[in-house]
Length: 409
Image (cartoon, rainbow, N blue to C red):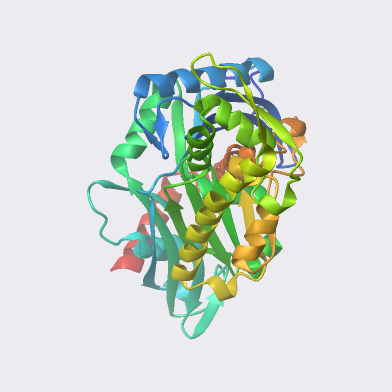
């Protein structure tokens, strides 16, 4: 709990392959979130979104949380947690129910979504999200909000995201060993989209590509709803590894070189510009051309973007992304990334970062913080939905059971 008991706090925790980022926001009276603290630590013990050394991950999470709590002058007890990895899968499903009393109520909506999600899921899988796309009442299609409308039968189409249960349990275990509970686990690119996409982009059609250290997460919106999600298990660490091997420098220095001097397009770099490259084994540093660095980065960056392009084409939605591509995540900050991506995708590209945030906004206006801030926005909506669906007195409970029985029998 917070030291100031009347503060309504939401915490987002993004345990990435390269970095652990934590953000705490205070829910204000005007229904907005004010950033009051952030924490950032290098991630140790993670590989492509999965835990491979529990104790190292726990240490990284604990340090990030401690830094965040110190800045916010609070003590938190629970977090909204992101998840990624090649084990994350998606599918679109349909559900259908009769409409009680000839007019759609919220209970009818809940029942038809329940019908859509009632597909068999393997025992080793965990259901992460059931995201409604649109509703159909009798012959009228494409309905966004059916409550109050008249009809006899209602159908719903929903986007379902699942993950490997063991992977989710391992991430949760890292959080619980830091004496915190998990409010909910959220697919990381879904969280990022909450922070960086506008409603117009979602309606027109947009693709979020979250390029992290170990994975690239893809979410495609059209007509205001998510249609496709995917995780590609290669990302920025491949570039770092190439730099380390070709320039013969330690991984930690290769990462610094990539961040400070990297460019995705060699044509944007002057031939005369030099950088200092640390050596291994106590050997002296060497001066290398920054243009040579770009020549190392460009083919790998091209490979990453072409993998994303292939995923978009495979989804069958490439013609519906009128608003273009939104790159985010730490690797999206690289100079030349937007220009290169526009060449590959042949559509508008921008770099997305959290904007219009209240409080300590300067700390999170960075593509690397998109997921952590998006978790706060997701958490805000989750708490509102939870309050709206709060169980009513016994009489209300009886009416809901009666409505459910009518809808299913």
